[in-house]
Image (cartoon, rainbow, N blue to C red):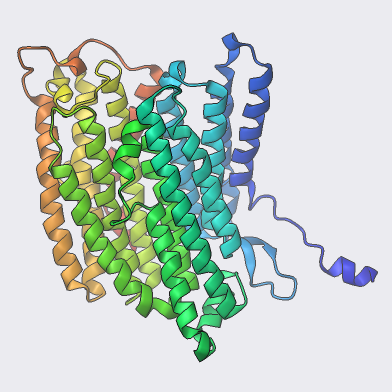
Length: 502
């Protein structure tokens, strides 16, 4: 009896689980500290939050020497619930860096939000997002996805008494609940067909599934992908995004557009490329169609935004993020037809570029929002006159998203994605992407021109003298520097896109 009891005891690789663990611990410290700190010393919570995220990022360094895993089955050591491989580390770096920039953007908004609750919810969501890429069984993966999402509902609706904020949180909540229900239904079908939740074992089980259960397994795979499509705001499941981003505090909208999207795409990659690889004929064409639909809906939605409409700048960024999600789906669809490792690298290369410049764009939007609460596109007219550095940074971010020089990193990222579609024999999808890139050029350039246009008879709200707070300025500068460095060495994108990550 003693021998049997000893055999099932496992040692935990604490270094492997340190990144999400440190963020979760920081969240608990913030929650407890908020109970005892007087109002005048709540600023200490900012230091705890930023310190926790930086420490979690540094904890990635010891994991660079090789793949590590923990929480493995005793009888099958290859089936583990937590794996820290190169894919995991890249996504965790993206998540932690994105959360850090979002935290810097959030400092200036704390006057209107309860500080303790805000930092606790942000760190809780970031811990789930850091856990998700390491999850290698569907139970852990779904739990990590919900830990990422559930605090986000509260972050969106944290502005008390704000109707738009409450409406945005409700729409986000309802769509996410539907997504979770669909995902769990799909997971249960696949589990019934294979008898396992571990991704690698599930892939092996699907290769030899009982013919009588083949339809059940295929339906489960399709439903699971649809559930992730809801979470990722993939068209036609995108309806909640514009209103949610508009009603949320701007740093939270930026966080959702980058960190939430990174976690969702990591989960989608794991379930399709790893777990459902034998059913590539089921999810491959479906993801390709969703990619074409998503990029088209997102770019057309951004194109038709009226410049004088309240919050039109934020709504344009929301529709733009939907269009960018369509580009991110292209390599995943290509993975069904060609080398999946290379396509995963392409997706993450594009995601890294998008994360840096999109968070920077939200940072400038937060700066403009300090003097122009309606945040219309027209409020950016003449921004160069009042905030020349912010205008130059915003122009650079928009050109990166458009894929135009000097935003060379955006151009190379789009070329890598376009090449993925061509190499996979998806010429029609490459053609759709080319048309959408042209559509996107129109609204990105239109916004860029506004930044340097002469102000009208009434001075633009954005041009009024109001300097950014230090954290806000640091966030904008950090994202701009990252974008400039990457644009100075664009071959890194192509090298990264050809790397084997899974």
